[in-house]
Length: 314
Ligand SMILES: C[S@@+](CC[C@H](N)C(=O)[O-])C[C@H]1O[C@@H](n2cnc3c(N)ncnc32)[C@H](O)[C@@H]1O
Image (cartoon, rainbow, N blue to C red):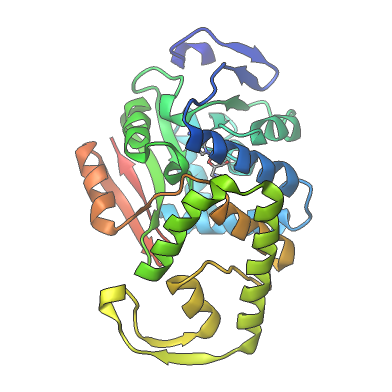
């Protein structure tokens, strides 16, 4: 029975599992509010469908599945699947569709779960919970597959959350997780500065700034200029021929622009980066240390400029 894997008594209302928790940490509270703001608005956009498709394909790459069929076969061997920090729940829904006999539970601290539970109310193997993944409501070793995609850095203490998600993973079960990578020094310093400043800004100001950054990204990108950059190791700036927009983006300021996703999704992407106060970044060795400390075996490890991700066995 579903209730068997929970630490406490739960009330299930249709596909919604009720818990009552609110973060006492100011940064986590601000982070939750900023994601509530983003998701409730993003659900109403048309651009979300292209973004979801891109996200699903990227997910396979991030966690080492050659294609959707292989991922589906993997999921079908799992009874309980947990999407930790599910946002609008489209990935949890994807898992539920790919493995109809599994039970998929999506949890998020923002209001996105209300939207998700309404959007997917007719999917009978999918549930949603509002709450803190750093205090997961499950008993030890109860979940066969824990997926924490693009989330852990937004939690109050990512190391503690990582430990908690390991705790609920079944013995020989798998836990997949993504962290942001540390970038060049000027970009890190600006990003850190923003984590302090965003707390003082209203959502209107943050949307305005996200629009301005999108415009900057678009202008730089449309210039179509390639620059030959020297290596500047002291600042973490990598040399070589680079597109001007990419150079500014990776080394100085996130000014996301993607023609295919369009203006709306690009604005949401910039908002997503600069609005939450919690957004920790890691280098490869720091991330691998966290995996090692939790006695997890690396099944698959992936790195790209923006992130590190992988699938780990308990
Ligand atoms: C960048 S979004 C990623 C959402 C989703 N995993 C996806 O890939 O689309 C990060 C999500 O983490 C959620 N989040 C941040 N801290 C959390 C916490 N402590 N507990 C649960 N969710 C959290 C946010 O509300 C947000 O929906």
